[in-house]
Image 1: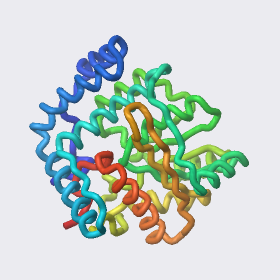
Image 2: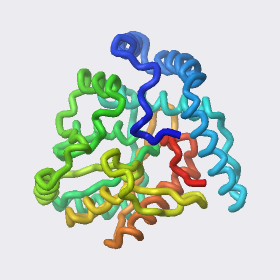
Image 3: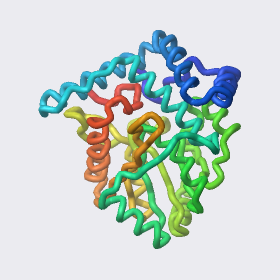
Length: 298
């Protein structure tokens, strides 16, 4: 099976995206999601790799649930892929529409309290995100605050969708950095940004296309999986507090932000803390794991 950076957009087109945008503007998000679900059904028929990855993920999580006496998660590959498509609609709504119906709430715990205290004193924070839930929709939050967010993305992936977002969004306080241009200058700039109380976000669950073999092994759902060691090293080198973060859909138009402080400086322990955070959320929200490739080793 192809790795994530070898999988290209399916069913995407600039005119098609503009048409869907006008459907959203005229008829609203519910009608658009209904239309997207129909389109996704036909795309999923040809997306054999995505269906296979979804089945493997479902079998993996079900085996873990059976072994630990947890209620079995039941969902089809189509429902899983459709959930991903609908999350893209939510992302467009949150980022591109000032009057969006998408709302965010916070999972209140000690880690969130600690994070609030750090932000209130002007500390910079390094966030390690993932493709669990809808992290890009959080770009809507810095737009309404005075905090600057530096978000690292693979801008070459999904060029049609990314081009549409760039055209219609107003990131304002969010600065997008391409992941393939990280060098000593970028690292120095991020260190300075954090010292000024700004925020940095980078995904920690996908191997780097430039360095696919630089990984660290962890265990998730009873299987070995590999995380990019570069993200963890970058976060540690910035010498500021590190939090794992996820933005999870909890109802039709509502998302909840979860955070977990990663206290250790040991890369292996940090990686396992991070994946444990994701595993707990996977078990609660299994259809929101949007890594459609061989993440879990046999």
